[in-house]
Amino acid sequence: MRWRPRPFVLLFALGFAIGGLAAEAPRLEPLSGSPPFPADNPPTEAKIRLGEELFFDSILSGGRRRNCGTCHKRELHFMDGLSRGWGLDESELSRKTPGLLNVGWQRSMFFDGRVKTLEEQVSKPLENHREMSLDPAEAVERIRRDPFYVRSFGQAFPGEEITFDLVAKAIASFERTLVSYDSDLDRHLLGDEAALSASAKRGMALFTGKAECIRCHNGPMLTDHDFHYTGVAERDGHGQAGTKYKTQSLRDALRRYSYMHNGRMMNIRQVIEHYDRGGSAPESMQPEIRPLGLSEGEKDDLVAFLSSLNGRVHRLTEGFPKGPEAVAEGAPGAVVTDSGDSGESGAAVDDPSYLNR
Image (cartoon, rainbow, N blue to C red; front, side):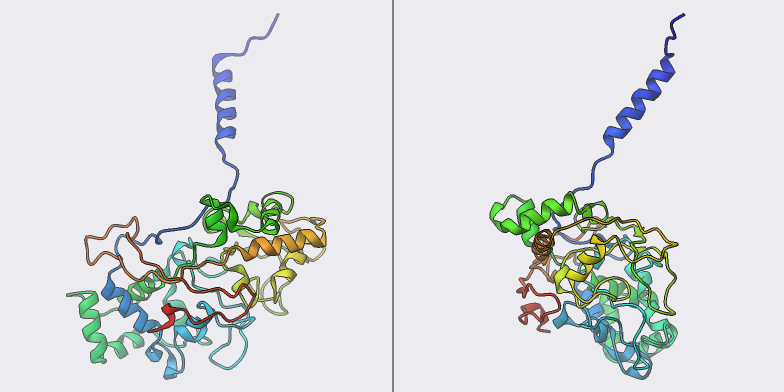
């Protein structure tokens, strides 16, 4: 007797096949526009100006010795130029200082993703005694005693009492204006064949193929926003082997001063060597990468491709909604400014117009 598949079996098989086909392979995509924002915190010019003032004001630190800009310097693309962060107690921190360009598109904050939004993130450095070391409640009291800030909060948040929630909303609104795109890769993806050199194009083929970088570094932000263990050695007494960390965006990768969550690697070539050998995990650990067997020429091509990820845009300056009519899809009509480009890892760049306050 011949077996005949029942209709529900055929439907199950068909559905499984269609579902498999529907899963898209990761791909490279251009980045443009402006980051999304929470429905309860639409950007306005007054709010952004206030957030910028607070970001660079030492009123938010214990002893008034530092501000957000101490570790996120304008002239260093909102990084600190160090391999790892430097603490309020004049000692090195365990992790590197993350850059802020494109932070508005991140789906979680910090290398461990402990908070999900920029608004949630703002209080954390204040609460850390080695970073800003100031109770947020004390920060609010200081601000309420300052005539400039009383006036500025009244303009940014009419009719609302000054609270740390509003402080966080203002700073987050400013941080969402710090973007980087219009890179050579963006131009290539939008149809400019001359935007990438021959070496960079070979590097892109490796990135999306043999080197398997695209598995985790994909989409407009060149990150899957997920958490992985890639066999990066932890520093003694800091971190547990096998810990998964957030995939870092590769945009502006060659403008950084160190790499990995703990600043373990000082240049992009060391990063490529790490992935080529399959990581440096202890024998008892299995990283989510494997040896690649890249030639020296292929590594050069990968560096050329990664050089194409430096953006030309660094500040959204105009075009934000003026008030509560703003919608959460994003801010239209952003005006952007060319920053200049050094093309060197850790090298200073020409002072762009956005640095002028």
